[in-house]
Length: 111
Image (tube, rainbow, N blue to C red; front, side, top):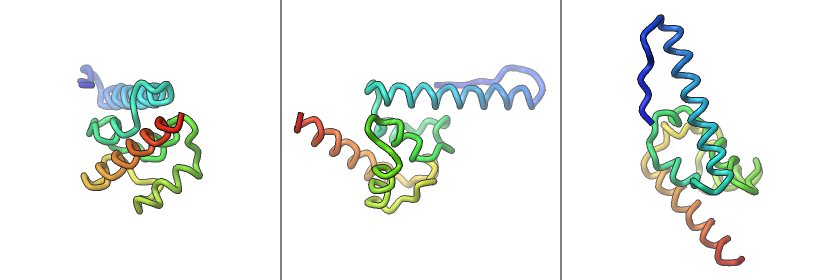
């Protein structure tokens, strides 16, 4: 998703950018909830719209994920709940995505 703000005063461009970020995040969370996109894909995507988004927002947007499950998942990875996706190291991103993928496979196998 490329974003180029229009001409105009700085505050107008900032509002356009903020609206774009909110819209992109809401769309991603809806797609995750519907199963069209995985949380692992968002974590690995490196899109600037998600850089300042806490990882808990992505995890909780998954079906059957609440604060408790999210907390246990992040505790296992030793990642803070308020950790922003953009500030995660590549190792943390890969570990989170791998664990999420493994969990979704094990859940899928039991059905």
